[in-house]
Length: 315
Image (cartoon, rainbow, N blue to C red; front, side, top):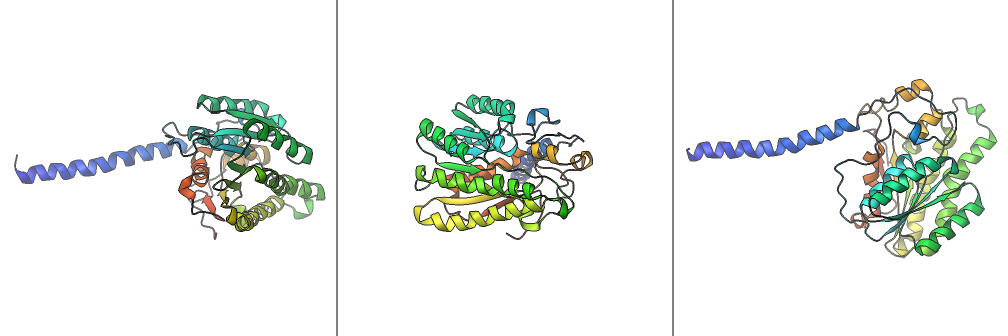
């Protein structure tokens, strides 16, 4: 074999090595493309175990790298959807967990607990209603009694009720949406701060509708706008303590919230209006939380990461 022929073979081998991982990547992307079926749950919060298909909470090939080894993480809304995915990713990265969730979601919470424990990590379940101030204090006390500290606080719990007519939004609906989506976040953050130290962090879940608004989610979008502003302002307040505060703004992610609030037709077409033309999976969102919680994001504070299937928003 001539030197020239050998060179050609090596070039072919090089390009083949580049193409093979790409094909594997495309295969993994296709696994995330799950068709959403028409379905509706009449009660809120929605339940993940009743969904078909089930959301994907972690990729089979996700490799932990001890990015959160020895950390204690609290996640509100941690039983299902985005919260479950974040909990499992955190556990695989070495963190122990405390999950806050509504008592109605007990079955989902028990599954998440078993998945976290399968990663070899501890998982404390703290059911209750985040709109109730006494519960928040009891829950914080329970976490502190168990772990004595908190390194990562993920304010993820939220709810929304679609109402296409603005005049149909009642004072009660507006009040309850703000109580859960922003007031509970304020109260929890305030209660946990004494147990946080330098290099710890807070991650809030905002939303794409915080930036572009929503015709049918006026109260929800308003709270998410508040979450974004809260994140940026709190980051400035805590920067001298070296506690980072950031947020993630999901787009259309396949979670129990969707099937509990949207019509059959809306669920069937959920996510098809973004450039990637599909709903995202919690497994595609959770690594953003891992990044923000880890030392990799040591120069990040007051920032929002957008995971939305390609929709361009001004940040």
